[in-house]
Image (spheres, rainbow, N blue to C red):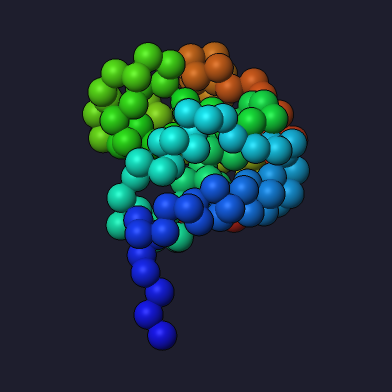
Length: 151
């Protein structure tokens, strides 16, 4: 049986996205209930070379980064070419967004324990605080359940 790729089934994107939002909201103990119109439109414009697995990963990342009840376009990958908030092109190799996401994941993994996060990140505690300030990392992710860290 052959199933067409996701790019040929765009009408399935909202249904799948909402399913993954619920899945990761529950897993991460977050209160994300939906997505903004801009977020959905950006999802529908993608080519989805990685099919549903790629969509699942994008939604997981967005839920991790979200600080409200709705996923916003600013939580989409920088590689999609949108700079949060202004719609201008951004580098696909934006180190700051990768670093921010990694620090968020480590903080979630340590349940917000900054000393343990500093050890895992192999940086000083002062640097953790500075990076948290720089990236505005003071949201509810600190109460997220233990997450599996990538190998």
